Each structure stands twice: as structure tokens, then as C-alpha cells.
Length: 87
Image (cartoon, rainbow, N blue to C red; front, side):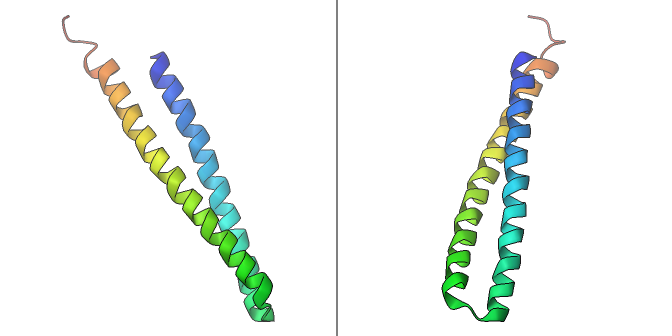
């Protein structure tokens, strides 16, 4: 059960990272839209590069989250699905 709790805790931390990064991407995209309207190409390019970097980070965190989900499921199945079986 300790392993399951630890895995769920790690997954919650990853979810926090996902939510934070998604909000940062949204914030930067809003800035991007403003810069497009202002036609400030130099800053626009910088913000677009930052958005691309954050999207890559988001993708990596999503992959980590998926792996953690699989590990949580396996841990749960090992603990609860085999607990009632005779040894």
C-alpha cells in the first residue's frame, strides 16, 4: 500500500506541473496575440520560441504522467487483485 500511496503522490505532483505549464502556455499565447496585433516581430518571435519550449516540456510531462498512471494501475492491481488469492 505504501508503494501505491507514493506513486499517487508522485502523480499528483506531475499533475500540478501539467496544470502550471498549461496555464503558462495560455498566458504566453495571450501575449502572443497582443504582440501580433501590435506587430512587434522581435518580441513575437521570442514569445513564440518560449511557447514552443513549454509545449515540448508539456509533452514530456504528459508522457511521464501516462507512465505514472500505468505504474499506479499495476501497483493497485498487484495489491488489491492478488490480495484475496491464496499464497
